[in-house]
Length: 336
Ligand SMILES: Cc1cc2nc3c(=O)[nH]c(=O)nc-3n(C[C@H](O)[C@H](O)[C@H](O)COP(=O)(O)OP(=O)(O)OC[C@H]3O[C@@H](n4cnc5c(N)ncnc54)[C@H](O)[C@@H]3O)c2cc1C
Image 1 (spheres, rainbow, N blue to C red):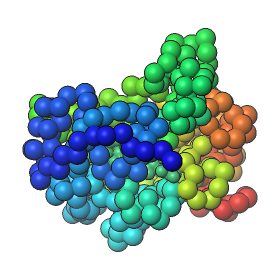
Image 2 (cartoon, rainbow, N blue to C red):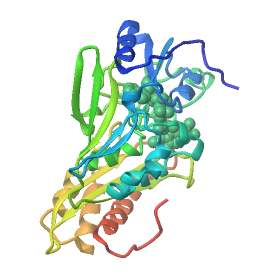
Image 3 (cartoon, protein in one colour):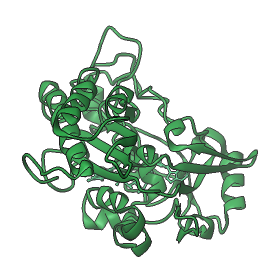
Image 4 (cartoon, rainbow, N blue to C red):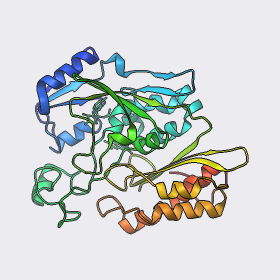
């Protein structure tokens, strides 16, 4: 059995106190929301905070609010189950409910939060392993070692961004509000991430993610397709978020195609989007967009199933997602 290391748990009553505690305790402190990502990672000694600042008591992080303009505000502390069931989410952004429903299992969806999901650690076959296993390979660059075993000659870590909500939030052009003792800032979800398996967030360690702001859909049709070995529990080994806006004459006026779990951050396929905008979304245009997304996608050999298969599935899943938002009949299987 893997045990948690000793740590001090602090339970602030409000946001102001939480950010002060994080600033006071510096790099040895981390926020914890549901703990469904952090605690397993601490058990494997992938992260070793000595102080945890609990966010569950913070009212500021709670609630889902539908604004008059058609947008949505989702508190970072809202649990995934609430996203799956919330009437305003289902009415305005069913794609968020679908992506949240695909995360893990019912128990974890009752504990895991939206903020925690957007900030989960990057994953890799050489990293998400018990301490003794990692020690046996002399560790890896992401924690305690020097070498990236995925690309041993290289100088960077290739651990994968594995959040299911992140690609969807990027496709919806959502923003996040971050607060620290230095003040607050609101940035696009896309700007929260960096293409580096170790320093994968632009968020400072003492910043708390308070809420996600989803702009009005304004006719946007969106979907999320997730590839994984099993139909439950597993993290994505490919996620495709697609969103399009179509004019009354059938022309696509806006498109977002975002890939998850192929790099250390969600990847927007601008090449695929360019193929779609200005065109009618028929089978040939969609096939060309899927081809454009597939070509540059470079999954590496650091997740479940083979990288060749995962790459091939980029084309298949982008095509499936785009056919769905275009209202074309499905060619093959239903989403996982
Ligand atoms: C068996 C299993 C299967 C899983 N499957 C999936 C899956 O399919 N898809 C998926 O996306 N995830 C999956 N997860 C990961 C995780 O359960 C979810 O992503 C969950 O939503 C994480 O939220 P949390 O509140 O538990 O985060 P925590 O574990 O509490 O935190 C995660 C990280 O975010 C930071 N953090 C949390 N909230 C805030 C905040 N408001 N401000 C600043 N920092 C914050 C923490 O410091 C930590 O670094 C799985 C986990 C397990 C154990």
